[in-house]
Amino acid sequence: MLQRMQTIWLLLAAVFSFFTLRFPVYNGNKLVNGMSEYNMLSATSSLFLIILAVAAGLIALIAVFLYKNRPMQQKLCFAGLLLFIISGVLYYMQIKSFTEGAFSLWAVFYFLIPVCFILAMRGIYRDQKLVKSIDRLR
Image (tube, rainbow, N blue to C red; front, side, top):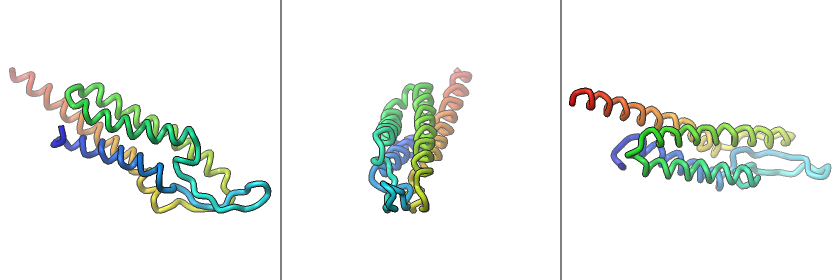
């Protein structure tokens, strides 16, 4: 149901998750065979990061179409947050291997993913509360 606010948040989470496949999160120099080499860290840098980014995006897209099953939708949002935490740990481990560098401007997309999932969960919770209050009136 596209008129619900959590649908917008879930779609944004999916888009931002897929953006991390294309745009770098971190730029800097990395030692490779004793030579300092400029590298960009994005989700395509590692197989696990690719899997987690695609899974988080697909979870958000699947959750959009489960608008009739709000508890399952909320569980999927929580799973998306869990995937974000795991990918954050993997990003941190990869960033430690850089000798110097800085976060890219595109990292904003990565850090907006959990915000979108949390706002979607909040909207789903409000819908559940509204349905329960309407059921009490019957």
